[in-house]
Image (tube, rainbow, N blue to C red):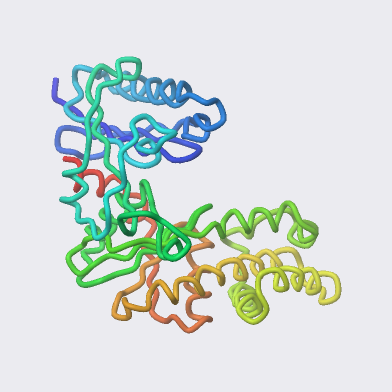
Length: 327
């Protein structure tokens, strides 16, 4: 029987194992709730190991393979953190795919699988001690470096670029002209939006829900962004209640308004992040409506030319990056 390959993407909440055939084409994938947050809660990585073992065995068995048929298994993401499976130090930016490949480590975990797992490390912005003088310029990532390498390759991007990868933690990744990772910036705007929507006085106005893809209102998102830029998120968020109670705006409008307001914080931070990358092209990944909202807010705050990454490319960037770095 032909050999197969596995790629493991492990996040905070979930992990995904993808099966590739001998030509390294995707065959199938399995997603499980087994991310590293359980390690932090439980004080050990037993649930992570169990979820990974079950996912691998289920995926192989579903297609008539067993562990002996696995040629290579590559893992990336939070699985290389102190609450993962094997902690690996971050690589210092600028970091090329070759730098990441050279820093990979392999280890066998008999209680997970009999074959070795090769781990892709994360990236941090600079080396040395972090103190009160330099912490603002520091950032780090585990997982997004692999996605960024894959996205750069899939887009066939000439020259420097900035990739915006939305999520609970929005990541902004700077890429150099040769496809190396030049640095990153992280925000928790996704978590802030969740908190405002579900755990503040705005919950009623927003219907305790985020705006759906077919209900997104670009004008309201831009209004939220402008108000946040003028008066800060605290005031801008409360103004959403004013628009609801006294202005008669419906819940969908308020949802778009709050999305724009929270994303404005990222764009303001990004302006400093881009100071020495003026010629970089900006690409926004992610799902609707956040992807569109990010582009709208960028334009509203005078950062023009952001391009949306097609969904089919976003879905492949992690696999592509893992193949580029780890195989």
